[in-house]
Length: 75
Image (cartoon, rainbow, N blue to C red; front, side, top):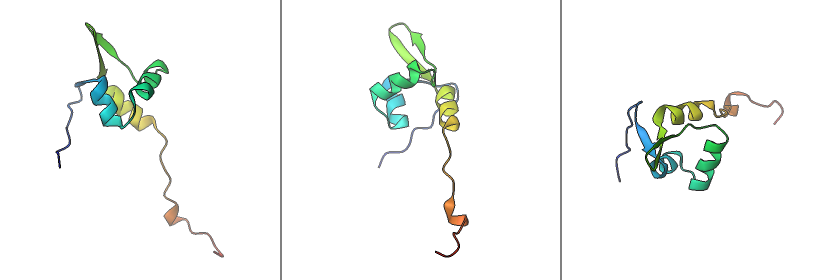
C-alpha cells in the first residue's frame, strides 16, 4: 500500500496528479476548468493547478446530510 501524498498549500499539481487526487477523468477536469470551478496557470507548455484551488473546489461541493440522527416515526 502506498502512502498518500501530502501537498503544501502552495503546491502546483499537474493535470495527471489533479485527476488522481480528485479521482476524476482528464475530460471532467477540463470541464471543471472551463466552468471556472478550478483555476489553472500555464508554466511554459505545462498546465498546473494550484492546490489551494483544488481545496476550495472540494469545500464548495454539497455536503451529505447524516440521516441516521433523524428517525422516521412509525417505520
